[in-house]
Amino acid sequence: MADIPFIARGFHSRRPAAPPGRLPPGQYETRDFPVLSAGPTPRTSLTTWDFTISDSRGHSKRWSWYELQALPHETPTVDIHCVTKWSKFDTKWEGVSIDTLLHSAHEAGVDKNPFIVAFCDGGYTTNLPLDDVTGGKAWVAFGYDGKALPPEHGGPARLLVPHLYFWKSAKWVRGLRLVPRDEQGFWEQLGYHDRGDPWREQRYQGDP
Amino acid sequence: MAQNTVDQPAAASPRLEWRVAKVVDVREETPRARTLVLDVPQWLGHSAGQHVDVRLVAEDGYQAQRSYSIASPPEDARIALTVERLDDGEVSPYLIDVLRPGDGLEVRGPIGGYFVWDVMQSGPVLLVAGGSGIVPLMAMLRHHARADEARRARAPMRLLYSARTRADVIYGAELAQLADDPTVDVTLTLTREASVDWSGHRRRIDRAMLEEVSWPSSENPRAFVCGPAPLVESVATQLVELGLDPARVRTERFGPTG
Amino acid sequence: MQTEEMRLDGNAAAGTLRQVFATDVTSALTTCTACGAVSPVGALLEYGHGMGIVLRCTGCSAVLLRVVRSPGWLRVDTSGIAVMAIPVGPIEPH
Image (cartoon, rainbow over all chains, first blue to last red; front, side, top):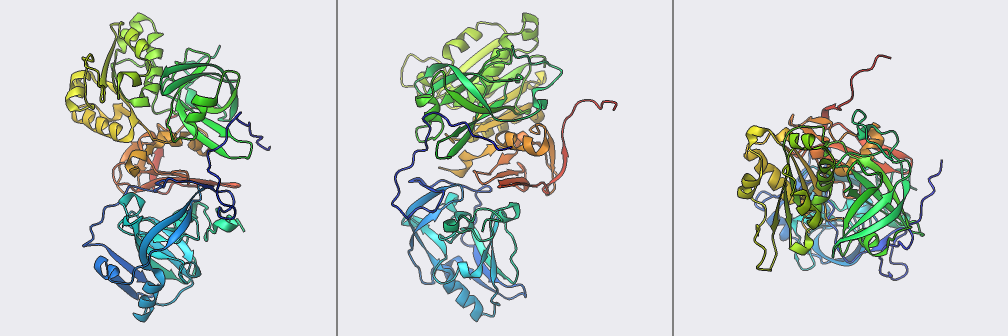
């Protein structure tokens, strides 16, 4: 039986008018930066922190915090879109391109694979097609708005993949596993989309 | 008249579905808090401490949903929700600025079986509230007040309520009245009151204050702690350190979602 | 805004959990698969933040329960709960 909603008199959400074409379908603009975390904020010391890219055959490449910092930095300004329907425009980040890291990993013998699983302190994971983190589309980000990325927003470093819903931009990221078959991560196991393109509203499994 | 029979816990009520309640009255409690009195069709009653979910749907289909504790006791046929206005919230400004008597409001409930108290449970009770955490505890105090003297005496209550200033204290006059009863004790602490003629506590709830207000652990009290997460956690930890049985310390954390 | 201040508990998830378990479970006792800690659902820490429900152990932070509602489905993962003890009335003769 269809659930006919009762319309609350005079209720509408407060959304500032967004420039046309800038908001994906079903989203609204926010000027805040809401904190959404699937668990408590981990605290990892930079002296023990590392980032690893590995394949399913045991090859891996590892960077310490300082080794990561020594790689070329980029400062992308991007719009971000959360599946809970808020979008934030012109967010400013600093990080190292995933292309740079993958290039280095493959030179060290790590296999190419069509899918990746990002894994994080605290146990969070998310899966993505490799194509969605290459070609200048993704970073390991450690700066936000000109300052060090705060812990509640994923610091010391998070994955940043702004063209997909923001649950793919895994906070407290510690590495990527390159895998031959897609392996669902934390939210995908419970029904969220394997890819998550906000322009095609790929929120849940089964969305085209 | 809605009944809440003791032998059928409200948690076992059949279907949890959305119903359109009618706003029959609104009451300003403080400059930032307002009570809504609702007539909910087919309401089967509730237990003190339970909450309802409230859902707002806009014409364009946009939806927002929040939970609000029921402030009224099970003895009242109509339910009362006390809402605090969060300036950048989405739902509370609507409930406080826009909603008026005669309007409909979608609710679902009652919900919750853990953070509840019934006057048939004997034994002393400690209630600790931070800010709007007072709301579910007020339902418990009001429920207590409706019982006869003997029953009230078997479950004496002590409330410790932390608010920012005197103007932020919700239900101030009613609490003073409830405290006239020998089985109820109310202690307030104001963390940001500027006026010099406040002679009560002027600091955050700490272990010394809890020790002063609480029942001794030898009396095996039940405790209900409600408010923002950091306050709830620190109070619950301290109560256990003071010797209260952890299984008898129940908590409900309010987020700043508005 | 600190994440820790936004942390709610199992009481906040009670409405949706009613739809999964067909009864209120906030008083149900859960045993954590990871560390063995026992806690009522109402006291577990909730981290769903609008994505779904995530209840974590107060002892070790392991995930006990996850629920996500998507169009046509309510997916539930209880693998973090070793045993869930739901209080019910006395057993009636059929």
